Length: 349
Image 1 (cartoon, helix red, strand yellow):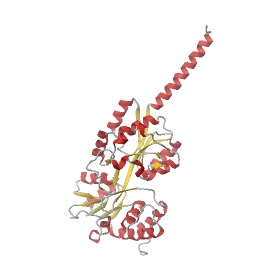
Image 2 (cartoon, helix red, strand yellow):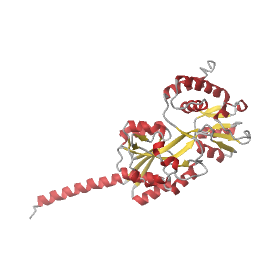
Image 3 (spheres, helix red, strand yellow):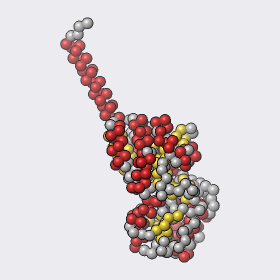
Image 4 (cartoon, one colour):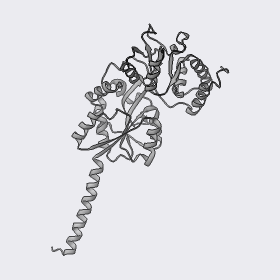
C-alpha cells in the first residue's frame, strides 16, 4: 500500500491531535485538587503522596462551613476532587449531587480504623440508603476546659457553666445552634437536634440563665485564649475541643479538660469525593494515605486533634459522644439566640 504526501500529512496531524488530547488527560488526572481545613493536608503526607503516585497535589484551605459550601458549589463541584466536611453538613452536599458514593475496596486503610469509626453505618450522616459518602478523618468533642487553680474538682456536667459560684468567670461559645443543643441535653432531650416547640422554650429559658452567668461569649480559639489570659476565668466551653485545650496550654494556662457525664456534642470531619472528580481513584488514594497510622498520629501531635485510626491522649473510647446533626430549624435557633444576646427576652424568662 502506498501513501501520498497529503495522506502522510493527514495521518501526522491526527497523531499529533491524539497525543495532545491524551497528554492533556494525563496532565489533568495527575493533579489532585484538595479542599480542606487548615492542617488536614499535612505537608509530609502531601510530599509522600506526590512521590508515590507521581501526581501533584493542589490544596485550597477554608475556614468556615459557609466558605466550604460556596467554593464547592461553584461550578457544581468541578473545581475539586476531594474535600473535608463534617457529618452535620454532608447531607446537603449529597442532596445537591456534589458528593459521590465511595468504593471501600479502593480505601483499604478504612478497615484499620478504630471500631468507633470503622462501622460507618452506625454514624449519623455518612450514609444515604446503602451508599457510603464519606470516611471519618478527625474529630473533637466539645467538653469543658477548667482552670485548675479555681476549680478544685473536675466538672461532671455541662451544668457547671450555670453554677452561681462561677458567675462572671465562664466563657461560652457564641454559636446559636450548639448552645440550644447543649441546653436541651441538660434538660434530658432524647434528640437535641430535633427540638419540639416546648423544648425550644425550655432551652431558651436555660440559655437566658447562661447569658446572666457568663463573662462573655467567644467566636474563635484565639479570642478565647485572649479572654482567658486577661480575666479571672474558671470554665470555658470548648467548642473547638482538644485543639482549644492545646492552644491554652501553649499560652501557659494551667487547665484541665473534662467530657461531661451526659455526653458531649462532637463534630466529625470526613473525606468525601466530588461527583466531578477528574480521577476518583486518585482521590480515593489520597483518603487512604491520610488514614495511615503514622500520618494519623503525626496529625494529632501537630494539630491537637484526635484522629480516627490510632488512640492518643486526645481520645478516650469511653467518652459518650453525640455526633452533630442538622438542627430542626437553624434559622429559628439563630433568631432566638439573637434576642437572648441582645437582652430582648431576658425579662420574659
